[in-house]
Length: 144
Image (tube, rainbow, N blue to C red; front, top):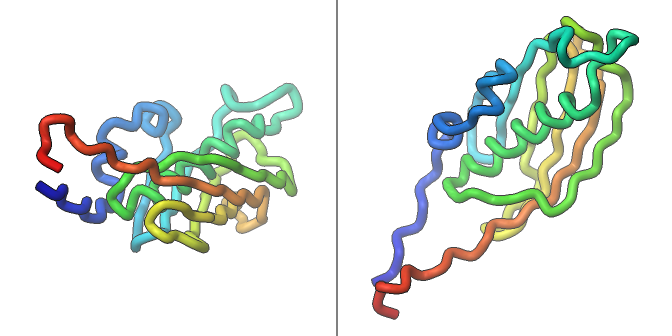
């Protein structure tokens, strides 16, 4: 029996179990297939001694936007390569928004671009993520 293809899910399934997103106070919107915006207010706990947010938090926000844009197609995928360009520092206490846009998606592989901006619209980071969708393995009890 052939498996039924997954239907797109605008992030609801992913969000339900995403403890990292909840712990960091990230909110996510998925307006259409292949697009997502993740938002986060940075806190003192995310900063260094200069009041600058550690790059890992900025990347986490970008990666979250990417994950929801990819998962909008209804199948989970994984990052195989990410390139990050940090252009300006993110300051503690700033609201950040990461906008992910699908550039290429052929059902098994994709390329996504993510821009991270502060609450004044300044571009802080650009991220390009290459991803793969793992092949679906047949259920061992399923007739071939």
